[in-house]
Image (cartoon, rainbow, N blue to C red; front, side):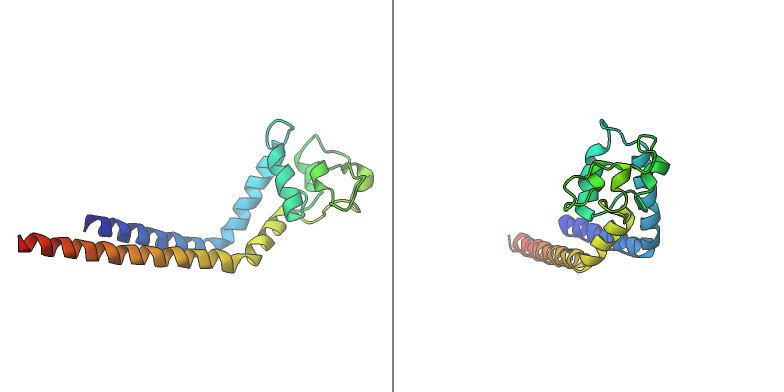
Length: 157
């Protein structure tokens, strides 16, 4: 029975987390901008380069709000230059130099790109959440049935 109670507590906490996520969804973009801007400021070949190298081509974006953020937030990219990961896949000779901007690079910011990714996959995310909740409810029911059966066995003896 203790197991069932613990599962119920975990389930209630997950529901509370879901409600908090829904209520605070407006602050997610603000927090994402802050984290991405801090990461962009600290960008160097030895630190977050792998993060930006993966994120920008995957979401077809460059910078936080636009490609111009690289010149604003990072001293390594002055004069309208950007990292090579901002280059479009179709641009074969792109190096992120000033001559590539904006024709051969992604101009949309990663906040918008990531936001679009979440919007496109929101039903999958919600479906997985509902599926996990269903599995947890079944687990709670089975734990209660097991506790009841064990209690009956002890009464018989």
